[in-house]
Image 1 (cartoon, rainbow, N blue to C red):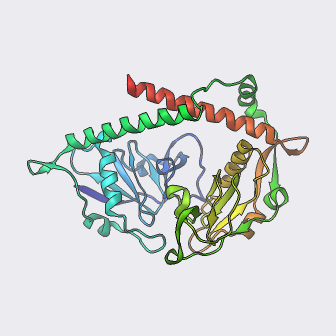
Image 2: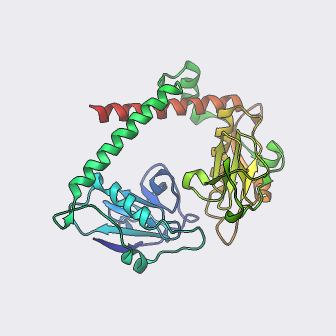
Length: 339
């Protein structure tokens, strides 16, 4: 069904320039369809589009419509059947994800041979793969999700994406903002480290328990154990340096550092989380070199300023504007699908 290939050339995240232009640079992250950014490199090393990218030690997989570059931990799954396309690719990804569900962080790594020999279950008709059914199934699933999305936006009052004059001004002035570098500990005090809680010791409950990883925003379970509970409106940084904003109370294991941004307005806290992620998620941290709370205390981040101090009001306005622009794109996408 597929041909499994390794990357054409290894592009090291620490030795390339990530930008908003160029061709997609696909890595093992489960965010943004695996795209970390865009790079301008020799096009002879591009991997083909209409393929599936596969993180060999994360089991993250995405359909890649256009040609892309990769790091050394990505395998390229190329279809042999010309009926494979964007419309049915999602079904294949779902089937493959289920097939590789035994994956465990730090305990699994899939080479070309292992991936090629993996079995997946697909619908058939008259002894052949039923591509028509798969495309119909994905279309129906998409329609259901769009209806759920519309209901969510309406229930949370997020249908209005009209920018205020202040938001428009912030977007217009973005390129001319004054930025300075600040130490994280000096801004928010010492970061807190979570405590280890083995899977076997976890009691079922309602408290989100955060561990390392991107799947489900790093929430590995909902527990009822008596653990330290961290405040909502804070930021977590996992062992790989990946930062995430938390708008709820939660527990965390020893691979989680918590930055105490709880006194900031919500949107300003989200902005700070993005600034932290940019500084911490650089490829420097991995299984052999974990990110800990002490690393958070030493981290420097870049923030817009006013009178040489972080301008949290401006940050909040900017995030509010960005949220509205995203909602606008989502609603336009929904309208396009409806038409």
